Length: 146
View (cartoon, rainbow, N blue to C red):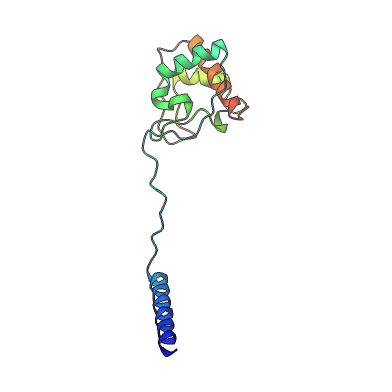
């Protein structure tokens, strides 16, 4: 009987020791990567509409050639370069279509974002900008910006 009691006490001591050891050992918890997004990364997530009107389709092609280098793919902005146009700041009631026409023709002094001034885009015609606006507005609507 003493042998069984002694063996049981030994098992209990080992179990308590193992428990105490695992509780006092620091546990490794995975930490999410909290590094800042890389320069050039999109600033916002953009949901594209299922389809674009013919004018907006032309505007997307023009945007991709002239605007996307700075304003990012699908106008999502680019960290370190230019702001997203799919953003509440650029909703029609705050930046009307004429503001986009004037920005392309004359450039824009930095006022909402700290990316520096936007230079004029003399290679873009008023008709090109109208198509680009149609594209931006359709994508804005798909993202709840009216």
